[in-house]
Image (cartoon, rainbow, N blue to C red):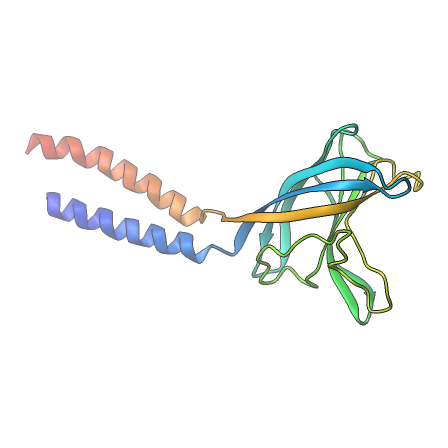
Length: 193
């Protein structure tokens, strides 16, 4: 009986492990950076947050970015995420987010790849000119505290994307619960024998 329970546990554990590895297409990335005022070129607020990408379908599942003081606003409302086509030679990927608490705030988070399919944490577009345009110039992530007043804006001076974390597969979570339930019900029976 004990050997049968151990075999069942190992089989469920192996299945659970394999299904969690197979679901590594949903990855969560951490974001950090510093903005610069686009008119005075003085240091601006910080950027932090995270976003989750389905790297097979190439879509953003969710995103949450926080812009620090003096604004201290969290932007989570997905206004648009997908391709940003400048022209035939310049295609980037963008996430436009708004804020529920501050409806005029807007962030445009720009990425170098033209798709999130296979995304593995490439950097944000920033002032290091890592996202050049074929006709000259470059594109960068921007924060607009008041989308009705374009004279106040910030450009990402430097940004980083780190720590890809796979989301656990729902099947593996269910199996872990079943294994725990099975062990709880088997252990008392083993004591009776």
